[in-house]
Length: 563
Image 1 (cartoon, rainbow, N blue to C red):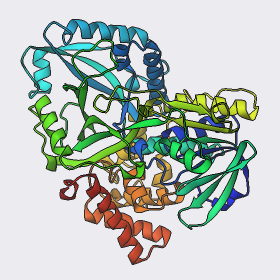
Image 2 (spheres, helix red, strand yellow; image 1 turned 90 degrees about the vertical axis):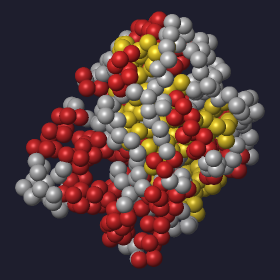
Image 3 (spheres, helix red, strand yellow; image 1 turned 180 degrees about the vertical axis):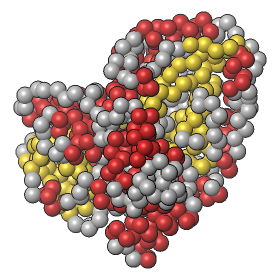
Image 4 (tube, rainbow, N blue to C red; image 1 turned 45 degrees about the horizontal axis):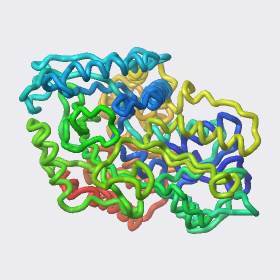
């Protein structure tokens, strides 16, 4: 991927996508496969907000059974299967334990009936999936087995547990980048740090956007036949400032928060921990909602807490005392965890659509509202403009397809589908994860550690040779040679082929450096030095970039500087 603003100015696109999060890049991938010329414009870095900071779960829709929403159960299962199929290096099955208590609503009979119904409704969930990415049927384990896995959970009336499987993303930013790189390889254009500040309008239709290049600070105009506004929590604000459109059903957002804790799971099972809060939309309430403690890349991920957020999306914060309250809630749910605030490595926060403004009870967060797809011609009298505000990363591919359907109709193009359910995205054309690991190991048996091999295959899939080519190592290199070279090669690859322009782009979104902890000072300095060499930074710029990383972690939580 090459960032070339001049090339964008000198061309008229069929579709301009505003927003480089998961919904925007999925739309670009879908549209380019249908033969449209596409450009993706992102005001920050690709996957720089909620798309990077969600709970990493790929939901199969089992929770929607409580709502009696069979359509969403089927939709979620289908989307989970698609991600397991097209991105097998980045998405995997995750076993989740749900403890059962007594004989009533929290007992085995009710939960077992629900899981059986779910398995029947999603009987096609493993279509086209290799064995290592299949979602097994739900099952039960004994009380003794539950306590062996989670000795600290509440024991009173415990009868055992159900085990069901969902999906988990290894690295959400790399999922976004893989969709984007797949689109670019098929002809799409993209640019990060390009902020859309207004729209070009003629009569009752838009025909382009005004853009501020945040790198050069110049303003340009980019033209397109149709515009898809997929800028998430910024979407309605952009419509108001750029066109004076105030949505009749103005979106409301939840600040979703999860904690990355410095605990390693010994067994790989997640657990659902009951909380006192209610799911107000549930037709069948088993006694409240759950927190989840989930093993993730050598850490434990705990969440999700929901809180109505009415501020500007650039100003998400965590109020004093919130962390202590959350930690207390976790420890009450599972006394064996006994999490301390100073064990929190990182706080993931993002804004999730959960309904319409003014229609939500601030103290009762309902579960998973639907995405908003708006045709502004019928809604506001503005032609060739569509807005998509998504809810969950799981459903991004499917909702993007619906948005592009609408775009095709507006452009008067023949309706044709794009097989995004089955076509692998960047790096996804592998047989199995283990098969790809063996291929890498056979070429570099000693010079690259097992951990580095795993990271390369997880993040780049079949395209790991594109990263290795930037490393100064050979298959015959001595043990340990690859330690620093792999990181350097990833940085070179990120700058030259993935538009990394700031140190944060590499630390948080191109590599594994900052996904679970604040990197050590020497790691940051080495990374910054490699970027400085690529981008021509002077000492002042390099120091500034390093400082921005520490600031980002500190603002996420008071404990992160200790890690």
